Image (cartoon, rainbow, N blue to C red; front, top):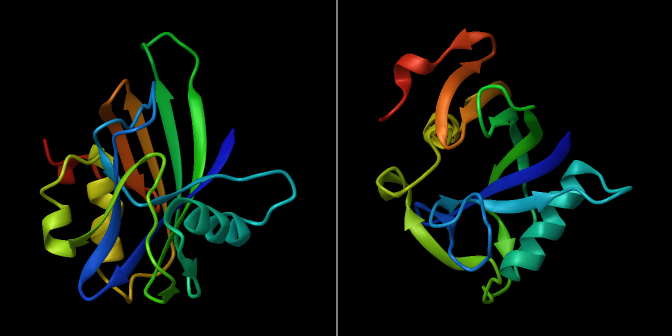
Amino acid sequence: MKNTTLGYIEKDGCWLMLHRTKKENDISRDKWLGIGGKMEFGETVLECMQRETLEETGLVWKDPELKGIITFNFYEEKDCPVYTELMFLYSGGHAQGSLKECREGVLEWVPIDQVFQLPLWQGDFLFLNKLRNPDEPLFYMNLTYLQDQLIEASCNGQDLMDQIRI
């Protein structure tokens, strides 16, 4: 299982978003995401989030707060083995520095309401809705994909498939 982080820095009613356009063979190509990446050996989850932020954006993120833990299961085909990723979701609003060019795509401050009009993974709509509420307690989400189609979604044991945007 791969452990990763994903973070959404908020500033002036916008989230910093990454439009994934530059990496070859990118499962998220042309989608919009927060910033983050894979944990390195010996690194804490928080250290990973802060390192990835600095590497991808040039910003030093001072207040990342853990908001959710999400298990992603990906199937290439129904009978293929599952690929699982455990992702730690962060949000916060205090980052210092100047944005730099990102090797994975284009960084842009997007008004939060407009984020939901962008090409996102289907499950991202679910956890991003939770990030909009600053009082939302820590949540645990499970998202299962068959190729790029979300086939199962739950949060804290409750089925979420009726909330999916198609």
